Length: 287
Image (cartoon, rainbow, N blue to C red; front, side, top):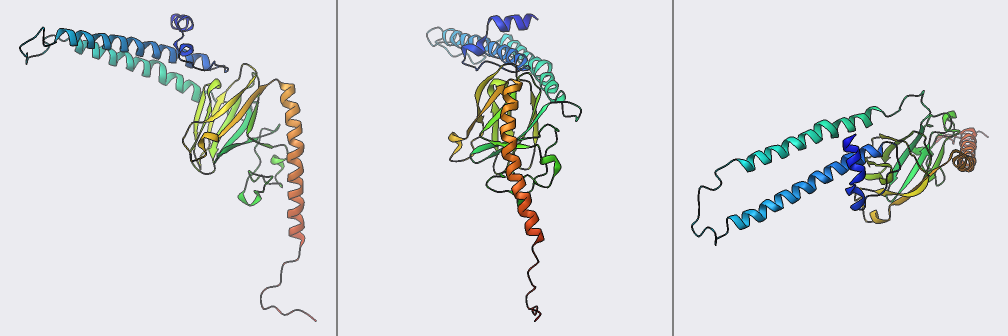
């Protein structure tokens, strides 16, 4: 409680230009960061003061003859040991437990009603795959990838019937738990939602879940936090936190579009399957 009160009153995060927090878990992270910033500021002032003292104390004017024995007490050793102990307490007593709490609280069970999204990075943008009302992601395969079906949703899979895919923007529901599974289809990218205190590398061939709960509406930018190529500076998308009705209206408009191209792709596949197989090479045609 004391740490939280001090952190709220003397907030170095705001002084340093850190963006305001808009997630349920972000306050704990901000308090930890603020404590670390104050600790580093105290260290800076302390060691810099000691440096100025050493320059004055051991100057040539005060010590015309060199003293090869140096410092004869152990004050500096005790100070250094104290700093190491404090850093160990911050890491082991605060940092790791906070990280473990975030990892263990991800609601991945089928019984929860979290909003489930896949964020797929590519050079140089983001695609977002929503699991739909059933909470299940539809199958994907590279052979289904088209200009409209950019993630290769299987049009014959019932689980894909209520899925939607958005490009360049991610819509979220205020106060609703959200699980974003982050990956990449080419090189390593970085998925950073600074206002939600979320950042995770997007690595090809892996899916890393990140969990958070928005606590206020607004529109912000998704930043790629890894240097990913010549177009890295332009790899930005936006995300919007909306009330349930606004999200539902957007979802309705997107599901109609998705169902349209999936239906057409399924019809094309059925038509192609119904076509007679071409005659084998060298086979004689009947007269």
